[in-house]
Image (tube, rainbow, N blue to C red; front, side, top):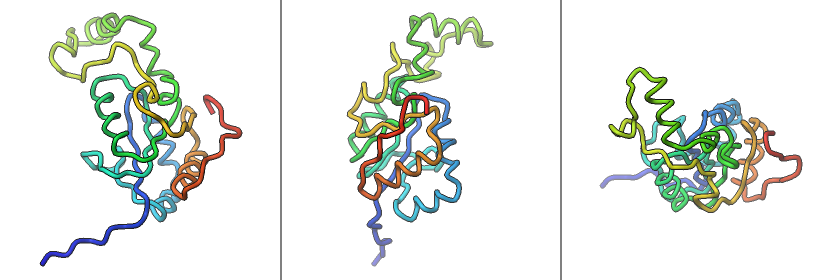
Length: 184
């Protein structure tokens, strides 16, 4: 008879990185020893800072960094939303599109031509070969694709604001909105 490890009663916590610079995750790592405090109150079940290949089911809280820029992001975000009880747009790219959405100022074909043909050594568009996931015509905010429960703005949010926000939600509270603004 095989024994299985007992299931934890702690909430399940995940972070995801879509189209952005990973600055929000760098700020998350700036929690330093407070990462142990989070691990004491939640099971960190998925993150780009861990080597986990598939997003799990039954996640209590997910922070989604970055905007939705390609078909893979779109598909992934819909799957994540279906598996997550509380979903947070994490950082200004997720909340507003921010720098990632600057490409919305130009036609997609012009962007691809400039980036992959004119300025690259390969001289060919990546969409022709499937080199990169197919870009969406427009970069989307997280809330343009799925329902968002909370917004955690900042470029990136500070480690203190991330910790306070996540710890509050994991403990069943509602995060404070006071003093929170775009770009902070």
